Structure formats: C-alpha cells, structure tokens
Amino acid sequence: MRSRRVALGITLLVSALVTVPVAGPASAAAKPVPQAAKAQGTKLLRIGVTQEIDSLNPFISITRTGTDILRTAFDYLTVYSQKDQSPEASLAESWTTSADKLTWTFKIRKGVKWSDGEPVTAKDPAFTFKKMLDDETARTANGSYVQQWASVEAPDDSTLVIKTKVPQSTMLALDIPIVPEHVWSKVTDIGAEPQFPMVGSGPYYVTEFKEAQFTKMKANPNYWRGKPKVAEVHFIYYRNSDAAVTALQSGQVDLVNRLTPTQFDALKGDPNITLNNAQNRRFNEIVINPGAATSDGKPIGNGNPALKDVKLRQAIATAIDSKTLVDKVWGGYAEEAKGYIPPVFKDFAWTPSGDVKRTFDLDKANQLLDDAGYKKGSDGIRLDKQGKPLNLRLLAHAEANLDETGGPFIKGWLKDIGINVTLQPVSDTQVNEDTTRGDFDLAFSGWNANPDPDYVLSLQTCNNRPNAQGEGGTPDSFLCDEKYDQLYDKQLQEFDRNKRIDLVKQMQERLYDQSTLVILGYDNALEAYRKDKFEGFPLQPAKGGVIMNQQGYWGYLGATPKGQGPVPVYGANGENTATGGDTTQAAADGGSSTGLILGIVGGVVVVLLIVGLLFVRGRRKTAEDRE
Image (tube, rainbow, N blue to C red; front, side):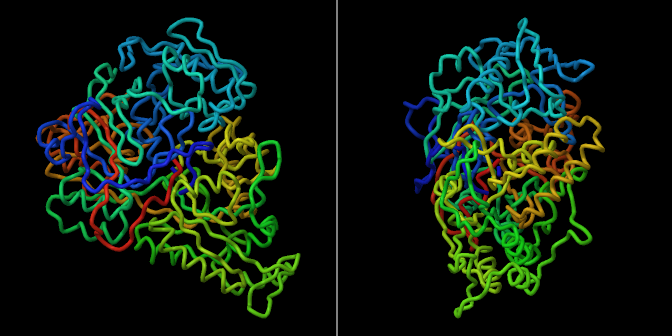
C-alpha cells in the first residue's frame, strides 16, 4: 500500500474462494492439514488478509500485502527502526559519503547468508541496483530511487559504491529489496513471477504461493538477527473482512487487520481477542484522470477529456466532505483530510490554511462551475465545453468498506453540483488494470506512505508514468506538472532537513491546487489477534504503532507464541532489549491501545483464500492495493 492498482503490467489474479481454509505443510506433496489442527501442534502464525497480491516479484510488487510479504523475505541496506522509524543499519552496517555527496560507500555486513546457505556479499546489492539501472521493467516498483544514479560497483565482497548524478537525500531510505545475484542473474524475464521456494535474506522466505489462496513462508535458519520463534507464517486470503473476522473468532487465523469500525467494536467483548487501534501511515484518495499519458507523453486511456480542466477538478474537490466520511464510513476511527502526507509523519505533513484551504461547500462548487462555463441542462446535469453532459465513471473496489459505503456519498454530492456519476464496483484486479491503462474518470485509491516521503512524492512526477506496456514506472494520478517536478528535484537534493520539509510542503500545496487527487482522510489501522495463541508482537513505531504492514519486519520477526515471552523490543541496530515481564502489557505499552498478538506455527507465512460467514455489515475486499 497503497487503494487501487497492482504492479504495472502484472495481472496476477487472486479472486477464487475456498470454503474451508487449509494449510499444507512446507512440502507441496504432503497431505493438507486443517488449519486449526495444525496450529495446535506447530509454531504457526496464520494471518488473514483481504487484499489480492499483485506479484511476489520484488522488482514488480507495489501492493500492501505483496510488499508486506517481501519485506519479510528480503533484507535492505538500511531499515526503519522499530522504535521510531528512523533509518538504521541492516545489510549495510556502516556508510560514508564524499564531501560533494555524490559518492556513497556502504560496508556490507559480514557473515550474512541467504536462506539457501550462500553468503550475502556486496555483489548482491550491486546486481540488484544495476539491474534497475539497465532494465526498465526492473524499475517498475521502485525505479524513482535510482533515477539520478550514475553507477554502482562492488570493488570487493564487503564494499558497495554508489555514485549519483546529483546529491540525493534519500540514500539511507532506499526501500529496495536486495535479491541474490546467484539466483536472479539466471532469470531471463525480470518481470516474470519467481520460482518457489524463493531464496531470501529476511527472517522468513517464501516456500509456496497459490493464487487466490495463500502465501506460505518458512523461518530462515540462516537469518543474521537470529531465527524467529515462529516456524511458519501463512498469509491466508479472504474475499472480504467478514470472512476474515469469522475465521479469527473460530480460531482458524491468529491475526487480522483492516477491520471495519463495526467489526472492531463488535470484537471488544470477545475474551479471546486483543484489539489494536493505531494511527496509520495511509492516505485514502479519489484520483481524477487529468489526461493519462505514457512517460514520453503519448495519450492513453479513455478518461473524460473534460477533466483536463483544473477548474472542474477543483470544483469536484470542493464538493467532497471528509468529515462525513470520517464519521459515517470510518465510524470516527480516522482523521479528516489535510495534505498528501499522512499526519502520522508530523514533520512532513501539511495542513491547508488561509485562502488556500478548501472547505466542503456545495454552493461554492456550483459557483466555480458556473464561472467556468459549465451550464446546466434541462435535467440538471451540466454540459462540458463541447455541449456533452458531464457523465463520469467512479471505479470502486467491490466489497471495500470505503468504496462501498463512501461511493454513494460522493455520487450524491457531485449530483448536487450537476455532475452525474456512475459507480463501477469491480474486482481489485480490474481496478488496477483500468487505472494503469488510463481507462477511468475517477477512482478510489490510496497509498501507505514511508517515513521518508520521497516515494509517494515520486508517484506524481512525469518520470513515474509508465511506458506503453504499462511498465517502467508507477504513477498515481497521471499528473505531469513542471512546477511540481522542479520542487521534487529540489527536495531530493536537499540535505538540510528543515529546508527539505519546506519544499515537501510546497509540493503538497501544488498537488492540492492541481486537484488530480482529492484526499478523503486517513483511517486508523484496526487490528485484532488471538490472545490465547500469542503473547504479542513488536509494534512499529513502538509507541502507538501497528503490527502488520510495517516499514520493516519487526512485527513478524518478534511474533511471540503464548507462553514464550517476553515479546522482543528491538533497540539500536535491531538488538532485542526485552527483559521480561507481562508481555501482553508490554505490547500495549509499546503503542497499541489494547496490546497485540499474532498466531505463529512452524516457521512459514501463508496467505489463504477463505469464504466465511458474514460477520457484520461493511464487507471489504480491499480498499487499498497500493503499498
């Protein structure tokens, strides 16, 4: 994450349903064992997810669930700390930079091994980054990080040297999974799905994937921080959150997130469930197609050309009420819309003020359209500049809480200003394909932002638009604005934090003005786990943080089965500083409103698809495909 498209050019469909969730052992040939039975005999963590996986190719995947799995399977040069999400050493144990900040030298940690026993050396990140520099497809997910790089070399097994064309302030926040050269150098199609089991360097490695059913992971016996307490992790796919919550209540899974407010409140009385209500790093949005085009400017898609008019887009933004969505859709478990960067990242978050600030005002929105020349027809629907009725399509994720519940509000508000909206609820995959091709007018979307805002900022640049094949870049709204791009380049090169913060806020103001997207709000991360199965999980950040979808792997690495506490607390350089005590309370004190726990068994992570009984109203398939 984060609420729409999967990886560009990838159409890995995850939509089938399984009436009884099962998880086979690590061997694909072994006879499947019911989840509940297996969990009693092994250290298995079963995670219920409601999002389709776009890809498990680390060069391609951009969805919330896909990247959550890959962050657990592949390590990075640096990671975001558990405590406060500040960058800290990982595969790179130290680094230096030249006086002109154009040359970065990383010292790679010695003694680290891949899951197959081969050593991790500087040649592995060198291969990963060079592949991204040389192959457009390899830049699909994270290409913005290397756009200004000149060269990458590994002069020896412990030294990595990266030279950049301009100073780059994000060099300690490279969210790029490092892949093993001895495996991926043999891959002829870098955009293809990987072979299983995958070789990784994280706390778990992927052993098996079944489309629309599960992803299995197994504990990495060679993991340099130490083998996890959980032997297996299973990500089990459910078509909607009703089914996932039912599975949690019945003990078929141990941990779920992305609960609806109704589900979250209903679980408060369950003695076997612990809840976690955390401030999220996600923003939710409506993207407005301003005229989709490829990276070289060639128009694509079938978006309504009227939306190229910024005045029309601004009127639409004025007619959307974030407060109503927070109250009626998210049940108060959310924050009202402000800027592009979520409020959880206080330094970079921007709040519109003064004359710049828009407030929900249907009269003003109508006046803006009147002034822009959009006259109403006899049926009350306005006409565009060519005399055609303003009929717009709103793409929505079927069974997603925000889309399903919020869509009718948006349709009604826009009708009040003379714009006819047709809601189009379709599968996640269809939303992803249509928005990637530019075949939309309006669409529900959203992203999980990083502690360093560069990645989500890059989504709105001209360079991040895809090629004609839908590869080589990851756009959000298809904005291509010279002023925004100039500000982006400046912030990327700015090492003075206060000056960079100011530039990032200027960028958000420009986005706000151009209105190719409308922020709807920032919903809380509502999570739940079986307290009879797990002591708890490390939160990120440690105070008020989340269990799942972290900027790292701490929650899964430190998942602690019942009776095996204390729950780890990762300090400087990822060292476990936990000393004991009541682990459930420790998890709660770490930032959860009520504590947190994850189900673990055997050392594998699995994502299973399950159809469950409807738990409550407010089903959601996934409102956010994006990381």
